Image (cartoon, each protein chain N blue to C red):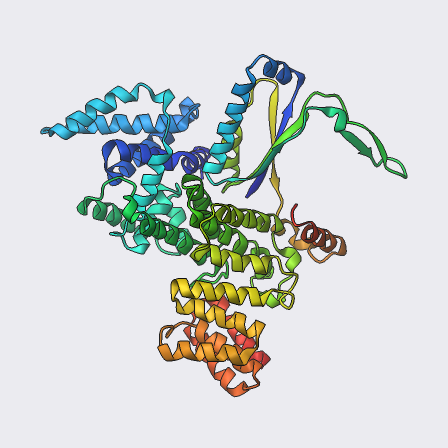
Length: 141
Length: 410
């Protein structure tokens, strides 16, 4: 079973980070990543840039998509990074998620990543096949 | 299953190998370490519902196991010096439970010991899945479609054999390193191939087995990052597993490569597999057995279709592989590649040579391939006869169905 661990950080978390030596933050993250790799469960993971000047939002509410500076909503609970792990049960995902080196003001939302068996009923629809073909072209998710 | 059982099982998967490895290093006895670990797990099942899951479950389990070891030895009437000294040493270290720092080296020792050559392959597999994989005996039994008691006995005997042979809890000497590592990789790959193309039972693919092998393979690659074959094995498994979604129909029928919907291949997994092969190559020591196999799998994984596959490259890789391994199964696969690159006639020459050598007698693969080639050459009656032989030789229901379908198509 694949799970995505989605990091959300509030302003409180940012404050906490400012009060902690950067090297310590990096080390704890590195240790956690190493633990995931060492346990053979990490499939991928990345952080999202803090500098929001490159962030934007596309809104599909109207006839044409509208691009504005992002991210949307207020900056509390900003999506700041993710891991994708492969484990044998939801319980195991809970265990790993609980070990993430995050402090007060941070939350981890964990969602199961779908695989082929989730779409067995829809596998023959045109749209689904096209989406799969796109995955072939780009070579990765 | 109760909540606490699920939690303990999950914790054990994550921490088990390191707990057992630490205990084995301290006691010098893998069998004893595994017994102590099991008792600690029983304690966890009893105590955690009330006390909650500890902050550092691995440290808790290790500390509890060590205490049991000490108590057990103290209770014995005539303790010899070795146990007294061990009890004393453990006693000192138990209080530092929160600062428990498991060492990777210990897990490496564990892997090598569980795959020690004095053990039969079956024993190596069961013991490795148990102590390195952290699987329960029930899970292992289910994976191999045998009774739980069979696995329990296999593990008990394995521990006794290690004791009787006085196998030290150590990583191998440099002189033995290569062959011992080969043994470990072989165990992992054995589990994978059982999952990739099951030799018995009624399902074509056992995903649970394949995924366990992949996980243990990744663990191993992280433990010995400078070993190209460790990365290459991971690459091979990722690339082969990437086709699982397309190899079986929704109703469980096998789908052969030429009929697979390639959009159903897991392209993330292919990317991971290619990255692992690149890591092996980056070590600059050339390609050995698993790397060559992975490179062949990569050719398939990156091809748009059977016709668009670089068969000439695959033939080259198989030639290199047969030089290295002198394995009739490799030669058989080489024959299939030659039939795609050059034509069935040249391939049949290779297959007939294998038949003459008599090495694959009893395998369904050989008559299966020979039947294919004969069919393509228009020698229909001979092809039929080979397929009938193949169907009678396979123990896997799904594989038999595939062969019977080929007879229909003649």
